[in-house]
Image (cartoon, helix red, strand yellow):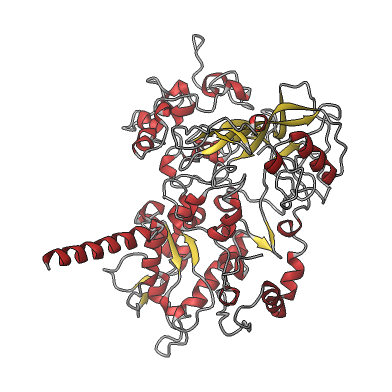
Length: 382
Length: 238
């Protein structure tokens, strides 16, 4: 129910289109507060800087201009929840050949679209304007003595109700092959209790699948409880229902009671014994796309272009074209640093997306692409 | 007295600073809005070239996408708005359209007769008021936009052809439409909204935002299910 002092007649007489503020009232606060859950959405987007989000900050886009609605169903695939009512992709507006300005690079950039999600290059860091929570250890909650300490961003590392945290800003995403589909652990699903890490959500994709693209993710990591006998994730009862509530964790600080009541409400058995386990959730990064001139440069991924040989590995062109300049044109992390962002360590970074971790033998320019037989300018000593 | 004046002036400056600090503007959008407000002089005479001749002459003159100065603009002309104002502005990616069509004359189909004028000009320079008795051959700006955009989108089978695909409808002023007592409670408000919007209410009740569950077509093993969501089976670690 709305607060008592809200003039509902005034509200009803002033209805309007949805806006970043109306959607953001919930979606900017995922995880219990501003920028906690989403790495690419926060209250910054109410009045965003152009460099933080070109669509909203440069062109004043509202959410529903991309997340089109039909009969109140809103398009968009969340990675954190299974339900989806249609999908939104960059290419719906920008097409499969989004680089069109007639630059010498357009052909290569449009080829990259077949293998890379746009945000790999166009949003090379997440939480670029505000720190987001990346680690949440529920097992340490309930410690009356532990005093929260503030990190370098001024964010607390602990909350008695919630446990231990880590916050990060301007983070290099984790990259994975993504076909657009996800594996999910749902309520009651058995998990491998002996695994080091349990992925609650993970992208489905492969380097060998032409429909999969390298995609940037924020991985939310944390420690949470699993039923030691039933091998499924436990759902605690957190919020007290009323003053007499004897089981809510945030009132009584007793995990056993909270799991018993939580699982009872969920309609699942609780064995009475639990185990803390590390779990990860992969969340696709979709928002806070930067202006085109802030995209990654060729050399930031392709180490092979860092030396003297660049485009002239293949192009025998002796006109006055500055190949080196082309290969180096892109995100200026020193500029971002000058604007107060925590990106000093990225200024000279190369192999940005880590080719080997994605299944390549190394830089595809040297070792060949995933479907191409011929590498470019291969030399044995490479 | 002087002190008082200084304090007063200081307060004014401070208030001004606070006010300006609060105004946020999206720079590219702001530029486009300013441009959209402009009404340019009406071009009475145009050169009646056949389109293919014109296309070749532009190519010969070396005019192409590289000459495009306005990458993006808004179609929101006062020429239309002074007569009727039912829709929000249309975002128009000018350079992108130039790149896709690779033919400036698809839209810039004629040029001003004045040889000193620029080769291309705005739609609203030639198309202004409809049914201008001095220029019965000219369609108005609204018709020109709609015929041009929709015809091409249909022919190319690309781009929107429905109203909402390009522009939102303005929300009608609800001041007089909404009939509620002062201090109305939430139930009265909902009932009043439903008086007109009963279909939308029925739709809303079937959505994921209302039910907190729904179809999960992108989740492996559950692609045909319709009951997963935060309200039922979704798990998280935060």
